[in-house]
Length: 377
Image 1: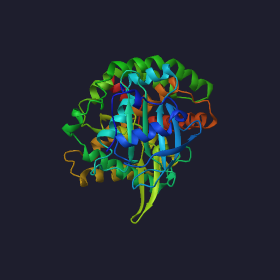
Image 2: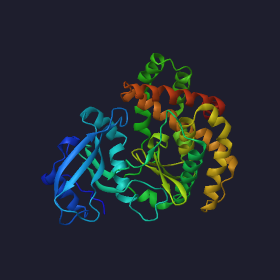
Image 3: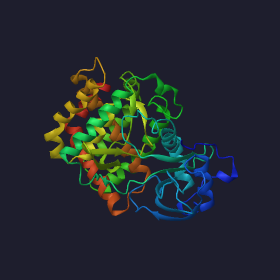
Image 4: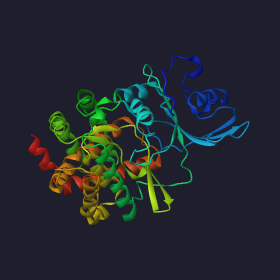
């Protein structure tokens, strides 16, 4: 059971920082959620996650001590809070980041048949008026985390892509997705997305100049002109549940009896959209250029085979290739908005931005994205 309540109760008001999570507050919250019954939280140690791991909010690992042991009571947990900056929080509220992730952990992640491993949720809190949120989820410290800078190995890439195909097949044209009020389509947020993209474009272009990333400005500027047509065209493609930020930094790998599994987290930009957008996002950002070129076709087949095996019909691989080309707009849009809005000044943040953009430019060139834009025009 996951706690998801309106924040008009003073006793459950959302803490604004990890250090503001008190023992009394957490005891009451975990009891409301049915996680604990008799135990009380005695102490909490909040260890902030290093800068560069959570660009759009605050993250911390909590070490929790109780007055007595109780089955199911987490002794460690991962806390995600909204940005401490009200201005950033309101900007992100416009695109529903916090609302989306708390909704996902309330409505989908706990389902026993959800096809992709995700962290177990304990608490999911969101305040519609302020945009403040708090997620308390399973601590994955025991797992091996992915790394965008290093990229995925060939084995891990196949694993991630196969799991992605299973996720998309499960929700392929599923009408239940339209019943989730927090799950937006690109059409639902077209006006906001177009406005945000065009507002952030000048800052993104300047960042590309400062970081000496050639080629991105032309693609970004041209696509900004055609974004309304792109969103209109995309609405005609098969829709499914997409992760929206499907990349190595959001993976945790664990050993299983069968060999190896991948847990996927950071669901803030989940959408009802064309599935290959996730695939294009992964290929363009999580694999070094030469590795992606050498393995891309085989990964497309892994994804397509997963769709077919789980019941998707009438979707030939030729359509998949076209949708991957069109789906390159997903990472392009994400990095224009993120590059204009967020802080990439940490050493890892700067490296990540530079590396991902360089890989993206190469894939845009390889897939003749300029020709795709000409077709839109």
